[in-house]
Image 1: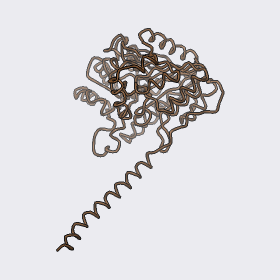
Image 2: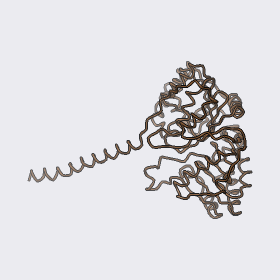
Image 3: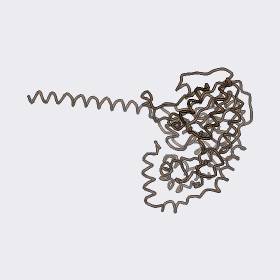
Image 4: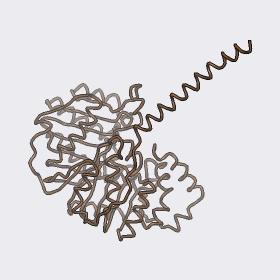
Amino acid sequence: MNAEAGLTAGVPLAVIVLLCAVIALLLLVIWSIKRHRNPHLKIESDAPMAELVPTLSGLSLGTPIPGNAVEIFENGAFFDALLDDLVGAGQTIHFEAFLWKKGELSDRVTDVLCERAVAGVTVRVLVDAVGTKKMGAITEQRLRNCGCKLVKFHPRRLRNIGVVNQRDHRKIVVIDGRTAYVSGHCVVDCWLGEGQDRDHWRDVGVRVRGPVVHAIQGVFSENWVEETGELFAGADVFPELEPAGEVLMHVAHAKPEGSAPAVKILHHAVICCARRRLWIQNPYFIPEPEAIDAYGKAVERGVDVRVMVPTAEASDMPMVQHAAHRNFEKLLAVGVRIFENPKTLIHQKVMTVDGVWCAIGSTNFDDRGFEINDEITLGMLDRGLARELELIFERDLEDCTELRLEAWSNRSAFHKLKDHFFYLFNEQL
């Protein structure tokens, strides 16, 4: 009896051990597939920024595209321009958004998209399934009933269990394949107004015309094909595009297996390439230790490094700001100047380098933006655009408080405890 009982008891144990081994092997396989080496933040080049666009675009899996025209729009003026252009769409509208909530702006956007669809324009709307939980059934039904092709990215279904954490954070609109909008703006009422208070956020976006629109159209296609399998072709989506201006541009968006995502490489490479000044506005700024070291080396070689973020009280995600606070002392110690805006959420994702190159897009400077979400960042070589964005930075400084190392080091123990606690989850916030 004892031998039989031992044999019976031994079989389940062996099965458990085998299952554990299989699970461990599967986890190892998943890790091996997903792993990549982070880029070492050291670039051996003394070339000026104006000569490094081929380098930046090549490293971030893009190519320099000349002949573009770019216009910058702030806050609610972005949607005024966008809606005017949408009314004039004659063939196609491709609209990609992360957040979409019921309200005045939702109604305005829905009205225009529906009117154009009824008029015979092909309207494709791609929205993130999690970010549009408050879009409302009535809005969804209106869009579908009028003929818009509405698709949700990575809805929470069993078939998406492996990618449920990967969200579409891009904000792209392409009209007739000729005009593109890229920004941090979402279809939520807090993006209306002038960023005058905590209920009205600051953001910056661009309207682009010229050959680079094809590349932006391709970024929209990437997620559209992933969800629908539909390929679109022809002059209504990829028309022949003549030069429209003098701006040299490149697009970062790809997430190759085995290598760091393009937006991460681009955002980190510019730290190494800056020679005079590097100004950043970003709502969620949590650089990794190697990036902090790279900022310190930039300061050592004479770069004026400034970072503007909202305070925890002004942010829509106070936990993220506390996670960011954990590294502020290190950044201040290496000479980075940090400015906090208590008035409103600074939501723009903007970089300017040496007064000649600048970037705008959807990418937050944190691990979720760099490693998990689908993002887009446009790089632009143009002194006029860089100066315009620097003027926006300087104007926003009027509402900011600069952090000082000694005072920051002496913040309360409770504040420090919150910072360290939320930093543990910074990749998922």
